[in-house]
Image (cartoon, rainbow over the protein chains, first blue to last red):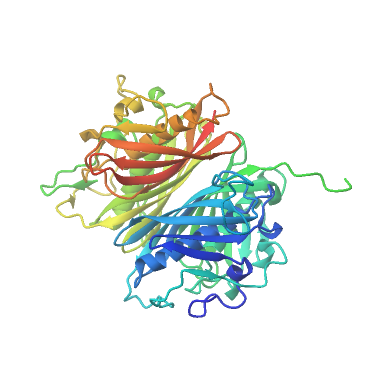
Length: 294
Length: 284
């Protein structure tokens, strides 16, 4: 399904096969199937992918709650408490405050069955992550809104695509420029943009996740594959429209106390080098299996 | 940093920031450069302010970050006022030698909000990173409050009070254990707008989350110590009446770390939710 032509036929949201449902005027849930293409070294869904889920569930709530106004994501936080192995992972969001200029949403992320029900009988029904989002309200007179929401806004919809046949990091075109500096790059292409034509908020979080993991991995003499990002604190400062979006990371703690943390800044290099997003990251080290044959 | 209608300065030395003895100063841009000021700060790590992690307890660290960030954002929007709406902090070191040095810069100045990035290092440990934070402030009509100070405006470090109480006593946090922790809203805990100071809410969240993590049924080290670390706080509504109650829920635990959801309610104001956040509580 699309809204005013968004997302386009080939888009990351379609390839993630997200299924969304608005459950009340102030609540919604969005889920995606767990595949090896979206998981990190611990076998759980990447924090950046969960952030994308949260971003979509927040948007689904906000668009209904705020209409005829529109909104822009101001910040997003996510804390993963255990690996999300599926078979599906679902974000459930509710409004905690609706003000004149902002809307705040809280979300919990759960593992769910193929049918979308809780894993009461077959697995752990407790949450895998806790998240929040803040949206800035854009008044309806603002022409920035490219999507006019009709009264017939659907209760349930699905983004349909071909699915991922490679890692999501490769699928969206992230390349590592300098791991030590946490410098990774993402081209701005239709596949990853939102309805404003800027890189989707969840994708920005995923980019920061990769950059932070690379920097933290390099700080201990390995690569980013052994680092699992568990915490994201994302501040969206400006739209990343031009690209490439390039990161720079500062390692705060490379693991002296077991935890790892970094600050990642995402700059729209083609957009006058504007700082688009700032992200604080928390991470853990995962013991990697020895390569087969070693 | 604002003054009332008679021109009196009302927050050059607020009791909450004075308690943590935060020294702060404005860092104007170089001459000829059209940019907003940065801000700098320094906070000692006094013995009575140390937590289980060995350094300044996280609630105190967040209070100093909030004070410096509020000062920075306030300067950025003059003559309008600000109020903190969210704080996101990653804590990389719990054990500090001190003093701590803080630096803040404006990341975005919008019509309705200001976003600031702040970092904290331990001067006593060669500038070791301690924390990074992002805070957002809403821009407010100052009403009768008018700015009254010279720029750049330094605020000196308050002298050490040898009889200063510990944070729980100063912040009027009732003794207790378990998932609910209560604070009495006394006048010294109010900010210049007359509402609960954001730093006081941060200290309450720290104390409450630690008590909740220690009380949880799956606590891995029943006799061990814990300390608050990474924190997210959304200041949703002002707390004006009190008492103020922090209700906690352990979302999950992973590798010696519990994530605690903290919902702070103004009990006397219809029990409304005033602050929502999370605190990562570490076994130390």
